[in-house]
Image (cartoon, rainbow, N blue to C red):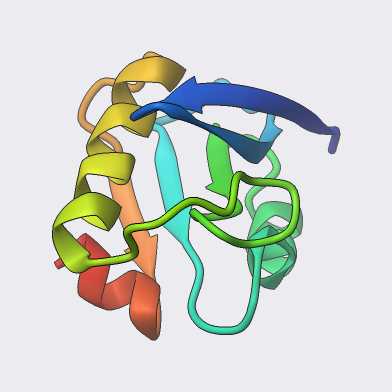
Length: 104
């Protein structure tokens, strides 16, 4: 399994995104909780090496831009913009903790 790291511009800021290169099934977008980052989804990426999985560091976390505001509307706009910037078509959202609230 290969994890690629890139910077993606979305909703006016830069996001660090870790992604696997799998080609089977719909894409998966992982939203981490507080105070974690993309690494919390590394075990998922390792167990599903054939799936295309994207795990960004959300706004304000190391690797991504720290820029206010941090309200739920801005954070959900971030996720919407990331889906577009990554070219994902109807991704499966996998989220927990604060990422779960944003995904909901």
